[in-house]
Length: 203
Image (tube, rainbow, N blue to C red):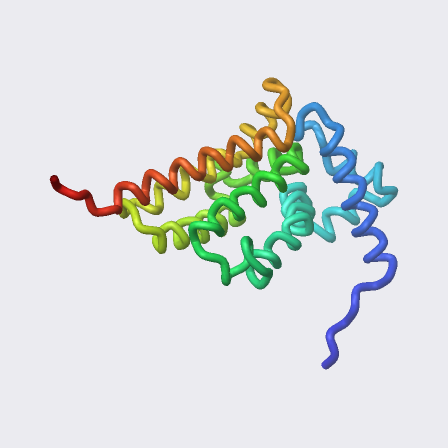
């Protein structure tokens, strides 16, 4: 049996909902203040339509974030270096972290809302588990101490949406300034691993 295509009105509604949610999360003062009723009104659809399509507010947030994440995921899974799978781990780790940071910076309030949906812990969300596994596995291919699991957590902590929002808002740092600081931090971590793995010469 051929797969049924979504009705045109359903496709239009989904696009309108995503556009409305994007706008509301971008301009809100607090991500928790954006409700399903707000999104439905801004999108010009009934609230029942949102619940049928996404289940609940968390489902809508995850769907919207996944749509923003798709280009990065595609680049990581099958794109060219430095993000793609053919890149050397030492080159790929900072590239992946930079991509995650840019996604969080450009979608700060949406990312904040998503990070608060993982049983009150951003570390229990599916997207975090995926990034952690990728960074951890890449670190295991770089010479250095064995605790790649913790190092991956520490590196990803620098891309948390609440930190990015604080740096951009309270600290007034630009996107490029935050990227530069993350790149320096990542390089320092990787260089330290490499130095600790290098054999020492005895005089």
